[in-house]
Length: 162
Image 1 (cartoon, rainbow, N blue to C red):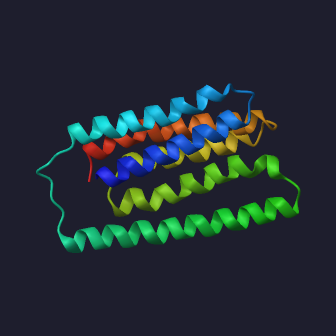
Image 2 (image 1 turned 45 degrees about the vertical axis):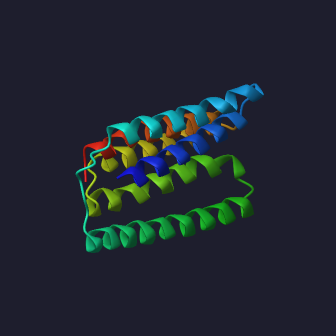
């Protein structure tokens, strides 16, 4: 449970950094996503259910599920980056990565189960798809900041589901 919150917050900060890097943002603004993510992880640590215990078999099953779908996500991102690079379409990279990351949440939503991941995946797919209709740097700013917000809003649900 807490691991999921930490992972979502780390990636939320990374997405925010991508969005900030695509616009002329002052250097100090890069601290905001990091501070927000650390604060959310700290808050969740205080709110976690200390009585919720998962057996070893359940933990292994979840580990395998997350590992398989994260590996598939990584391969898809690698392929997309190479294809877009060969097409000289780097401007589409961040929105397409958002679509891939969103798609990776859908099987996790079913397998964990984390129903909120259906919403998270759908929002990331819609965000990335919509951003492909804009041009760089706006597409990267919208995708980066939007994906960060989606992940920051998703993370606290780990306290209530699975």
